[in-house]
Image (cartoon, rainbow, N blue to C red; front, side, top):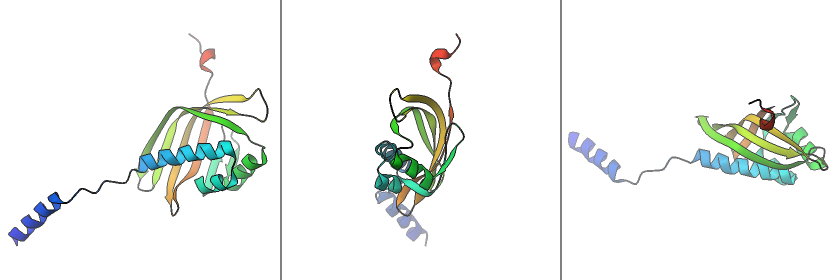
Length: 150
């Protein structure tokens, strides 16, 4: 019996290691797709990246769902021109749930001159049947660095 156990242990060492899924890389790609979808305001792309359970809290405290945010974007009520990350970090906190946090500059508005917001944010992605979907966003405005006192 000891010989069989030793043989099984050695055999297991010789098998190719199965790589753990790259959830962080998948979420980074999903977030890149989310940013592109929000800028393009394409309904099919938005539907693909937003979870049905999305809760999106803007830096002004207003709250949107998947339906209300998608409607605002596709109707032109909300127009995003760019989302540029100064910092974006991902961490899988439990299997199937990844938190993303960082700082970004969001350029938005219907007509020039556009509004630029420096934001700190916390967001999350959940692994659903169709893949990693954007489920939550909470952000707050950061002070303008040029206005910072020396």
